[in-house]
Image 1 (cartoon, rainbow, N blue to C red):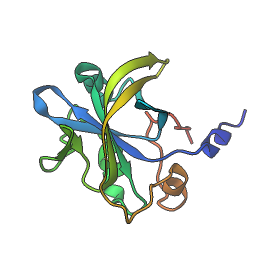
Image 2 (image 1 turned 180 degrees about the vertical axis):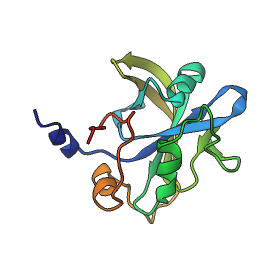
Image 3 (image 1 turned 30 degrees about the vertical axis):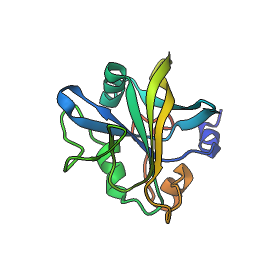
Length: 167
């Protein structure tokens, strides 16, 4: 089997944010987010069991999908994709809030959700979220695809990403 064929699926690049205990904002990079229904508007995100963000979403039942653009700073991916919120503060300053959820500075849009269901796989939780709010933050930029991230930015997949393939 050629696992690289899976990289031909179309993905975006997102930062999924939530709240940790004590009101600390946290988040992680994800490439698996999709709209499931339009009425009611519902999205699904897939978060690795080892990610602190998974634990936080399970505890408070809410998350935000921050959509990154082609011109979003690559440091956002480094910060949210290759460090753990368990032992680092991923937000340098108090974040802007959308529907009481943290928004990543540099996102081009933000969709806030309340968890309505979950599905567990061996390594990830798929959170099904009813959309509670959605805003365009930068209409001048195009959404970053996972292909763009790899081909143009020359980015790597973190070990916890659903698309990670060991080199």
